[in-house]
Length: 326
Image (cartoon, rainbow, N blue to C red):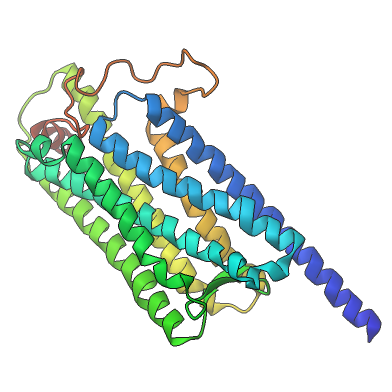
């Protein structure tokens, strides 16, 4: 009996170390990827003010998420697992949800920005001014903070369960309500709204006049806009996949490692991929070197190259190009 208990304890210790190593490794990769994007965006001149600010917002949220996992959740699991049940330890889940909400809302703001540009090409500069952009970003972060205030209560729990290596909502009425409505349904509504706005944007592009010829400069800017569109599409797909994985697929299995893969691992991965997608779709960010003070990103600014403050090309230009690619 003693030998059996020792074996179980040894296996649990090994599993804790393995899960901690995976969380820390993936978290640090996410930290590195998103930090690279943050540093690049500070010097990047081709995104324009509105798009660059919004991109910075969701990248900061991704960075915060990865940082909490790698520098808080993983070390606690490795060194002192019982601390996850302490009031301070439980706050990790609260902070993670804050960053998740800020990231999703930032993506929604990106979709709104893009849709406004396509449907109101002559008014978008007056809609997404610097003041409006900064105010919108500030409000989405304030909303994200307010949304996690209930988690300060000991009755509203979203804590890390060492037996499955994942965060779960508690069984109290408060936990059920916030888990169902302010997390799951809220995230679903936001992702669906983003998908709908992207669809409307795509429809607008496809239905525009397709007969106008373009100069080389217009083609270059058109190609960049198309990359932005597919960048957002990939990011939205990644977030929807993570939601489905966390709230559906994870409940179809009993094995803790499979549950871990569909929940915690997927959660860390989506925020790492979100930053990675930005890098993959933008050669200026790929070319950025943080320790090279002479690293040049994209040359002239958005306004100097004829691109407006939201970093989009003329509506007709995009429409014509997509039509010609059929």
